[in-house]
Image (cartoon, rainbow, N blue to C red; front, top):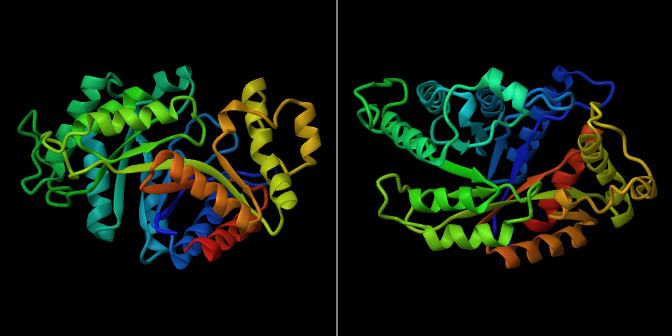
Amino acid sequence: MSVPLSILDLVSIPQGSTARDGIAASMDAARTADRLGYRRLWFAEHHNTANLAASATSLLIAQAASVTERIRVGSGGVMFPNHAPLMVAEQYGTLANMYGDRIDLGLGRAPGTDMMTARALSRSSSEPQAFAENIYDLQGWFSADGTARSAPIVSAVSAGTEVPLWVLGSTVNGASIAGQLGLPFAIASHFAPDQLDEAVQVYRDTFSDSAPTAQITEPYLMAGINVMVAPTDAAAEREFTTLEQMFLDLRSGRRRKLQPPVDPEQIAAQGGRDHAMLRIKAVGAPQTVVRELAEFVERTGADELITVTYAYDPAVRQRSLELLADHWF
């Protein structure tokens, strides 16, 4: 297939495991993805979650970059309300100096957590205008002279690194911001599918390559999709129940680590098989998943897909990555 595949990693922590175990499994997956030919590996930012260790994205990126050779590594994303923009420039400029032209910086307006935790993390505004102004300053800090656009503040460590910026979003608002800024757009359709088609159209309609922040000459869309590949459709559906249980826990407020797979009928009895947030998925044997991914590309016109795979057993995730690569690349 001509559309590249990438990976979004939330560094899950299965029941009976620790954050250390989750991070180690994530780095094993990074090595596998690098070997198999995936385009990029991004780490999400989440806080106050019992089953995810993806909080300090820059540290995860540094570790993943150190154990890989080819794959691009980045944030999917840095949740801007939680960070001072200058610190983001310095961190990602440092990463670019350490690992060269393999670092991406995806930026989001959501806090990546609940409101109580968001207040504890809050550092900058999530309003669209402030978000755009922060991006403008970031580009200044990544430019040749390393100076912010809004003030004579210099970041020597990021100067000249030209780290690529992406806008992350799940709604028409995020799509409009990405388009007006002339930046690539990563849409979080893997958990927020409701405005997918509308947001894609808004992004393309509002795209401007003449914006002072523009980094590309035409729209570039990367769309998120949940993926689980196994030798058979039935085996994949069973493994996918790990993610379905996680979303049932979110619905009920139950805080658990990642649970082992169960009979899909058990999930159906709890109303978890038709979860609205998980509509965008490709689950099954390799031929099934390739067909469903191709249909998703046709629907969205995506230039790239970013896949999200949760598995209780890290070996199951590794197998899924390998089966998909064998039948896609």
